[in-house]
Length: 395
Image 1 (tube, rainbow, N blue to C red):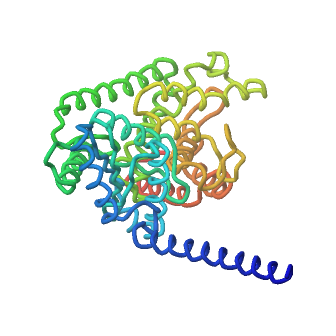
Image 2 (cartoon, one colour):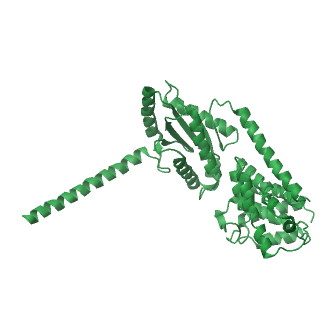
Image 3 (cartoon, rainbow, N blue to C red):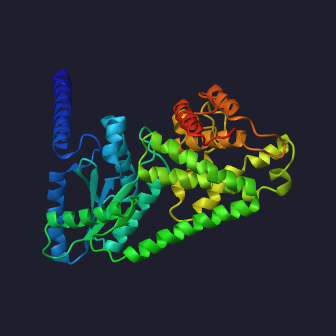
C-alpha cells in the first residue's frame, strides 16, 4: 500500500513538473509573439494594445498620460559602416539604459527600426521631458560596449482626451523630428515653444567653451595655441574615419579643451625648462582628471569631459588615468592623443627643439599598436602626407 502511495506521489510530481514546463514554454511562445527579439521590449502591436487600455483608464480617472519616443542618432550610418549587428547592439544598449531611467509601471515598446517608445501613466509632459533628459545625459556620459558613443533624439507628447494611440505617437514623433533638426542628443515636443531658449542655451554653451579656451591661452600661450592646432587635425581624422557630424563636433570641442586641466598645474611645473621629475609627473598626470571635473560642471559637456579624461590612455593599456586598453578607450580620445603627440613633437618646447616632420611621422608609425591606435595613426599619417604635398607642413 505504501509503495502504491509512493508511486502515485511520484507520478503527481512528474505531472506537476510537466505542467510547469508547459506553462514555461507557453510563456516563451507568448513572449516571442509580443516581444522584440533584439531589445526584449514589446513589439508595436502589443504596445499599442497596452496603450489603448491605459488611455481608457485615464479617460475614466482624468489622470495625465504621456509618451516618450527616442530615435538613435545616425543609426542608418552606424548600420552601413559597422553592420547590422552593431546597430542591434546600439539599440539594445539604449533599451537597457531606458529601463534604468523609467519606472517599473512604465511600458516600453519598439516602434521602428531605430525607435523605442515609452508609455508613461500618471505623467504630464514636463515629467516626461525630465525622464527623456535623464536618458540623453546617461548616454552622453559613456559609451555602449560594442557600439561606441550613441546619442538619441527624443520627443515627448501628452495625451489629450479623444486622442487615439496613433495620434499620440505621431505627436511624439514630431518632437523627435524637431530634436533631430536641432542637432540631435536633445529632447523636444512637436509644439515646443522653446526654440529661442534652446538657441540661446547653445550660444551660451559655445560662449563657455570659447571662454575656457581663452583662459587656457592666457594661462599658457603654448598650451592654448597647441590645442587650437590639435583641433584641426583631430576633426580631419574624425571625418576621414567616417564619424557623424555631431561626433566630429564633440571631438573638436574635446581637442580644443583637452589640456584645460593644466590651469590647475603650478607654473614651475607647467613651464619647467627641463624634463619633469617623478613627483612633478605625478602632479602633471592629474590634469586629465581635473579637466574632466571642470567640463562636467557645464551642462551638456559630459561627452566632451569623457574624451578629455581619457586623452592620455595608451592603446596597450599603459596610459593614464584609468589604464584603459584598445577599443575601451573612446575613439575621440585615441584621435586626440595621436594628433596631440604629433603637434607636440613638431613644436619647440623650453626643454627641447622641435623635431622635423619626417622624424615625427616615423615616431607615430613606430608607436602604432602600443601608444597609438593603428587605424587612427594610419589615417593621421595619410592626412599629414597630403598636407605635406600641399606645402602646408614646412618642416
